[in-house]
Image 1 (spheres, rainbow over the protein chains, first blue to last red):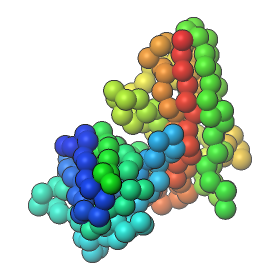
Image 2 (image 1 turned 45 degrees about the vertical axis):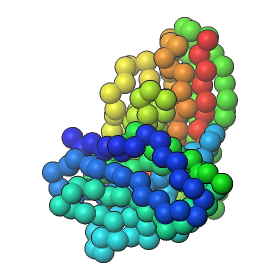
Image 3 (image 1 turned 120 degrees about the horizontal axis):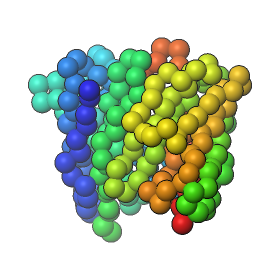
Length: 112
Length: 114
């Protein structure tokens, strides 16, 4: 069965600083990979996804993620964080015909 | 196009009662999944319905059940509520055809069990 690990439960960055959120997955083949964001009291919004092809994927709100097969990682990055990026971020793994498995989430706080 | 709609958004129940939550997927989406989100356990998959049939099921007790109607709307039911059932219940839909896993989530139904 697939699993997802987000090692950082909380991260605090200053506004304007760069951001990297880590995600490691465990699965025998190449899965489909996703990053979702959840603002307080809201559902999850898809930031970006990786199915195949170019390992660097661009998403909404200026986010990008890089799939590294050798490291089983799919880290999320943003070059300059805005205060509105404060939220909880979830990495997820999916395989055809099955449900998504989510990581535990990373809560991002942004300092002014 | 309207998003995934969940009702009610908030509800309070007492132990032993039962609850029914409703989810209307995005128009054209035939797959509906349910997830339970708690601070301790994170996001856990409950079940998925596609064309009125349960296609996948997570590791939850039989008190948790669901169904899907011909218009793709789905309901989930929890019977004999326990305190630990307090959670945000999220519904998500996808087209279901290629089943590539991309989900569109509703805002959730927050259940509090007293």
